[in-house]
Amino acid sequence: MPSTSYPVAVLAIVFTITLALRAVPFAVLRTLRTSVIVRRLSVWMPVGILAILAVTALHGTIAAEPHATWFARLAVAVTACVHLACGRRTILSVGIGTAVYVVLVNAL
Image (tube, rainbow, N blue to C red):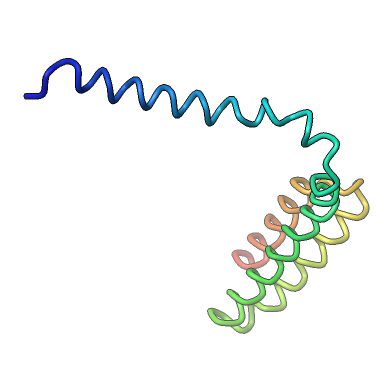
């Protein structure tokens, strides 16, 4: 059985690393607020997420069930429409689009 100093040293190292990883974002927060890259990411990230969701949904359905492709396309269209109509709320549009797809696949 290891001596008491070994677990204490391990816990001290883990504590230090965890504290540092949690503190770094707050330390660079002021720099990130004025960053051009962060501003661009905040504009393009939701669009990128929706594009990845659409490609993944369509690719997965084409490979698994060809007749479900139309359901996926309809769900992607609903997602895009809700996203544009409801003030670009990503979680709302993805949630509604996913619900439409699940209902179509399970009901028909």
